[in-house]
Amino acid sequence: MPANLPPEYYQIKKRYSAARTIEEKIKVLQEMLAVMPKHKGTDKLRAELRSKIAKLKQERAESRRKGGGGKSYHVRKQGAAQIALIGPPNAGKSSLLRALTNAEPEVAPYPFTTQEPIAGMMPFENIAFQLIDLPPVTAEFMKPWVNDIVRHADLVALVMDLSSDDLLDHMEGIIARMKDYDIELVSEPPEEEEEINFDRVFKKSFILANKVDSDGARDRLDILEEFYGERFKIHPVSALTGEGLDELGKLFFQLADIIRVYTKAPGKKPDLSNPIVLPKGSCVIDAAEEIHKDFVERFRYARIWGPGRIDGQTVARDEVLRDGDILEFHVAR
Image (cartoon, rainbow, N blue to C red; front, side, top):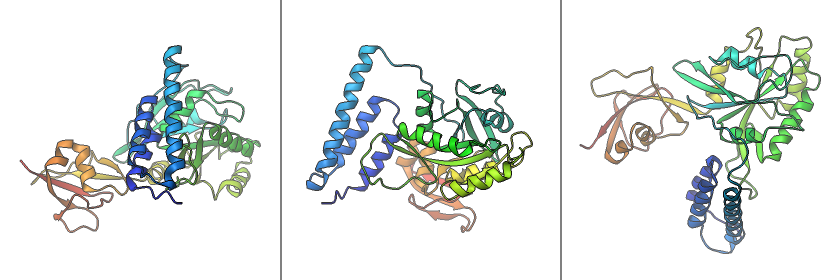
């Protein structure tokens, strides 16, 4: 018998992947349970939810008895999107971070140079992307806290070494290691999962094929394309020569599925240097909420300008926005 779950269930479920603490996860699962209809089709799912809540409560109790866990890191999100750089030793993640951002990570020819997360901001037009350099990941080892940062990043860049003959082994090792932590690296996350797994997350990922300037790199790139070209977007780059780096801002913008929206006061010109960044598919009311929650409660209507728009046209709260739209809000006083 089908579960026939309501749309509210899937909206709440998305928040579970973003939850950082055990308390947050328990709260979200309880909300999912509350909106789930009660019939035979949902019996198994309801049991899974209750079981997961019980396990989380047990973890919470054990954590309190032990006085906390091991080392962990949290990198506060900044900019239009947070992009985690993962890859094998000496793939050139730190060199890319240094070439693209204002960060100054240590760059050395020996493996495992990066031991802590290092973040830098990469400018693109009137926004910026936050890149995070992480310790190397192999089939045999990954620092446990890397899992948490990858889970909460908006995008994952697989930095692969085109100078290495072990290229494919490195790819498989990283994919498998992430899967051990219930992280599925995919080009596009599915809208719905076929099976129940509350710990699993699907992370939108792509490949930065680094060191394209090295001997034999073009042949290895062809091999990488043959094995992974249908699975991931592959973009060749060189942190040393700069090849392919100028196109990364546009690539990140496209992969992040975001839009830029601007606001203006009546009779004034818009400030095009400070956009509101929203997910694709966002509506007028989503932009209002980004400004202030009070705008949502007092919202009457908005006027809009932008590509393909009738300048100054009045739109309602559910009007879907496009990149480059300019909004003029009118609220009740």
